[in-house]
Image 1 (cartoon, rainbow, N blue to C red):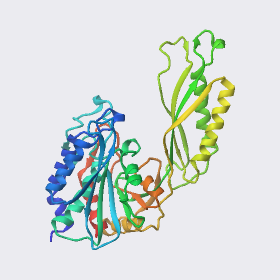
Image 2 (image 1 turned 45 degrees about the vertical axis):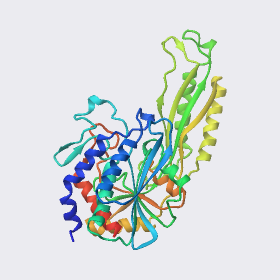
Image 3 (image 1 turned 135 degrees about the horizontal axis):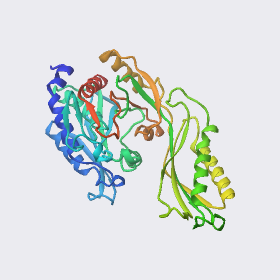
Image 4 (image 1 turned 90 degrees about the horizontal axis):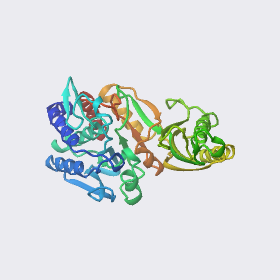
Length: 403
């Protein structure tokens, strides 16, 4: 029987070819001007079947915005000796747009290999995790090994825009998961592969609409400056960091953040005082706080600015997510930690993050999930790359995790 390390080295070029195939099939959500994941999903499904994977199911979330009419997710099963719990690896198929093309040194949709790295949009986020899981499972199939517990690979849609058509849809509309299951999400990590994410900050996005009265730039007394009121409100909301001010060294930064980000166009001329303004806040809040309590303070800030500037303010929450932490002692955390120690002699460190992953949805359902990978954190950057040795290293770890 081929050793895991030898198997992966023998398949190094096949791993690169899978990355090339996946990158060439663009999977961008409608929010980014794309047509969803179906083309990429079909290419991946074909590759899986051609390589001996037999138990493949496709789940489709309706979405009229894409030509396929649905957003697909794939579940691949390798039956184990026991099924009292299953070991899941969840990676996402969708990618973000390229951003400014002039910043790319290569074609983002054609993988380029150089100096032990492959370059292209999505090669790390999240195709590294997808490919490492696929080849770890392939090791069991090609060697005729039945794992001790059932392996489940889940390749989801829509992670980059909130997972409504991916993991959220699956949790709400299927019975795929058991609370005893162990879930690993290879969608974040560090260059040494030593950090295991067990918690996420609560995520709150605000879209804030301020309505005043438009007037000439020389006569502010005749209007109500929506831009001025919105600017004041963004500072008030930012200052909520002083109210929700606890610290937790599991996270970096170790405090809650309330940051104004995007602003929509208001007027076309400098000499027009706008009567309408829309801006956005990205808030990442320590899990010790409840978002309902945060929103009560948001309401107070809005009322204060309405009274001061004689405007009307309303807001919506494009994203709103809170989840409990996975305990350091949870079986999935301990099993992954042991695999890292055995395969790479790495002493794992447990952390929390400010970003959101599909782990939050599962933790809300009482399912323990961890996030881990070995990567340089190239997500969403121009000239995104994946270090091939990192992908193989991660696949080795997963082979041990599945044992």
